[in-house]
Image (cartoon, rainbow, N blue to C red; front, side, top):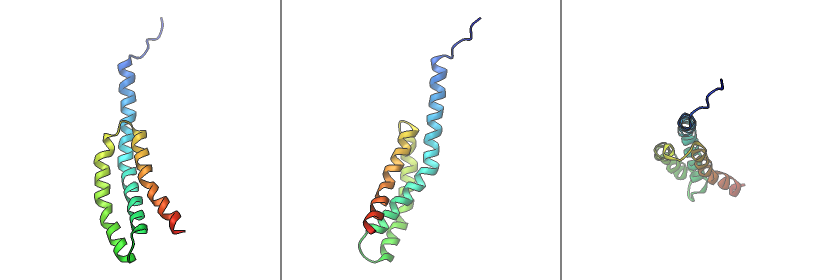
Length: 100
């Protein structure tokens, strides 16, 4: 008697479930972090007074967060969703580099 191999459809379902979990985690944790990082970059890079740039950045967090929460689950995989979050955090790194 030999052990039967798992069917390819079972393996596909398991792989899809793991990707779905990664996309969900990117949506729950990555979206607010990326939105916060992007709004912090906005606050650092906008010219003018700190009060106005901070107000604009704070007002931008929620729409960015909602947009990301709607779009990240549509990514092909969880890895791509996390990469998108990381790419959106890059402007903060650039803003901090320019300010130093």
